[in-house]
Image (cartoon, rainbow, N blue to C red; front, side, top):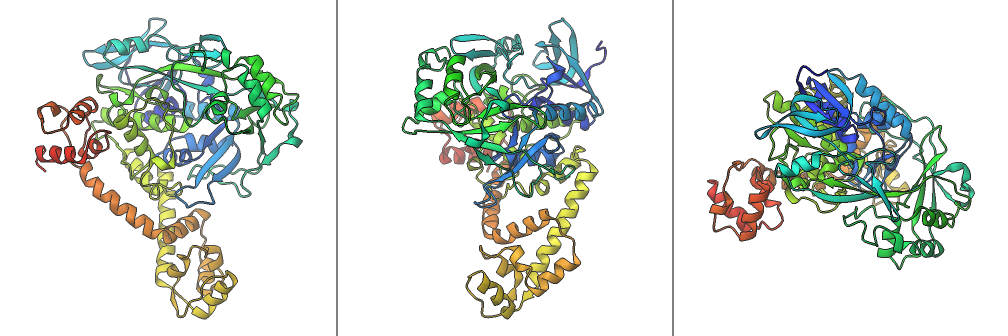
Amino acid sequence: MFDDAYDVIVVGAGHAGAEAAAAAANMGMSTLLITMNLQTIGQMSCNPAMGGIAKGQIVREIDALGGYSGLVSDESAIQFKMLNRSKGPAMWSPRTQNDRMLFAESWRIRLEGTPNLDFYQEMVTGLLIDSDRVVGVSTTLGIQIRAKKVVLTNGTFLNGLIHIGEKNFGGGRAGEKASFGITEQLVDLGFDSGRMKTGTPPRVDSRSLDYSKMLPQPGDVVPGHFSYLREFSLERQLDCHLTHTSDEVHDLLRQGFDRSPMFNGNIQSIGPRYCPSIEDKINRFAEKDSHQIFVEPEGWRTVEVYVNGFSTSLPEDVQYSALRKVKGFEQVKFFRPGYAIEYDYFPPTQLKNTLETKIIKGLYFAGQINGTTGYEEAASQGIMAGINAALSIQEKDPLVLRRDEAYIGVLIDDLITKGTEEPYRMFTSRAEYRTLLRQDNADFRLTELSHRMGLAKDNRMRAMELKRSQTDDMLAFFESTSYSFEEANTMLTRLDSALVKQDDKLKKLLSRPNVSLEDMKSLAPVSAYFDQHQVSDEVLEQVEVTIKYSGYIDKERANADKLTRLEHVKIPDDFDYKKLKSLSFEAREKLSAIKPSTVSQASRISGVSPSDISILLIHLGR
């Protein structure tokens, strides 16, 4: 069946695997996507939503690189919101609610329409290794399939164990079996492994809910989009709803704690700090008498509802009795109870910054196998693993995004440099250059880079160039054109803002925090400009943000440029830190374990001090 070797084999077809396979295939690699169930490609295992705080920026970056997540999210959206609008633009984060079935269908159709991509349904139970290099995979049927590169994106399936109360059983997801064999082989090859856990809430029947007792949560009046290609528009939206738990709900939940795997010792692994279960919330925040519950529809044509905020592994009878005390859920009917799942992961400090493993050449890890949580984090690792596998085959330089270039760069650098002992989730606070890494400019940051590699297609490049040209033209107009101070003061009086005493450039007026581009249209030169130019909302946003936040942007760019100099100071792979006795013991130990590729990466390792970096620079001839 598989006489010829593939360039790339991707194991697993979740968000990481789907993006990895698409990237490799679109870069011309003969690619095979192997999954245990072809019907669950691109499955939303947990909440039916994409994006959110920092995660929305990641989806925009994947789209700018030529990935599919943004397009799939737009095509399957049932609601769109730009979160954090009340804060500065570095915090604005797009989010969609999605039709779960349409999301998976869109992923499968796009992948099936991708040249160079084959599919196969079976469980991969082992890797084919020649010396220190991967050369393929083997399956439960004993079939050996050879490849130059292998990308593992196993999600929660590696020795997965599902917990509901005191009951537990093997599984990688509700209704699907776990995967066995790969962990054991990797450990034999010298990899360290660990266990993590995550959880999911009950799914319920919307026909059994009383929405009159809940607060509607509509989408934006003018819905946006993830993809810069703007192929889909959201003509109508579905509301989510908000309700709350109560002391009565908490008391009922506490009655099941003695049967909870979290509290009776059945679960030893660590769950996500920033997405805790309901039992964890009422235990950790005992002083709170209520917690938010978001009621999220699963699609246009289904009555199934996702109970966001009620993730749990308590016994099903406890889940049911407690949820019926939540306002609007008095007559609730379950589709299925919530559960927790434990699974194997591999500490990501065992990876290079390309996501290739340090121990086995040609083997890449992406997604939850690296200790992350979230669709978006997984998808971003997937596209980077697929890109770097393809570039390696083409004998080209790898793509390593810096921390000032992308949230994806922050994510991967955090993983390989610091590792993680709990499921890693991205936040805007993790990015020190978040003013540079806004959701509105990911195309400016990444599309040209991806186009040069052959991943982002010509239509993306043309769309980006048009947006950049219009933005530059408008910025030049505001920098070079003056306003009349009499006309400006009429506008400023209306806005209750300090008046001006003389004519000046439009840019200076727009830089005021309480003056918007919409307000500026009352000025004659600005009105004339808009009469003569068709300008998209994206360009308007880009211009306004650039002018208002130019000081912050320039400061962050200067700081980033200073640190970038250390990125160019490479450290040889075989550098022996133990010979540098002037380094602290902790620095020698951690540098030897992580093997950073640059001095900049070394400086971000916990326990490596500035004096250690100075010593390292001296020994590297700097």
